[in-house]
Image (tube, rainbow, N blue to C red; front, side, top):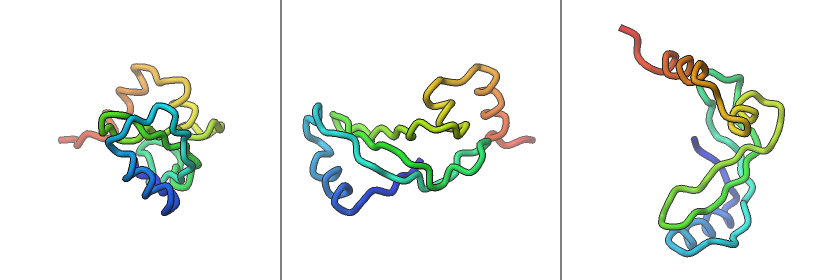
Length: 92
């Protein structure tokens, strides 16, 4: 998934990419693509958290009733995983 952040936050992320960031607060961002198998996700509000050891930032959707946000917050069942995999894998 891709997230848009302000120019200042983008530079902050670059500056802290390899730093110890235990107390860095999350940054606001907008989700910039659609998640397959969900209603439109483009433009959902997010919180972006920088992580240690060069890991990609964590993206948490703001808590709303959007199905993608609900699934991120509550987790998904094995049946939902199978549905997503089936929808995303090429069919022969």
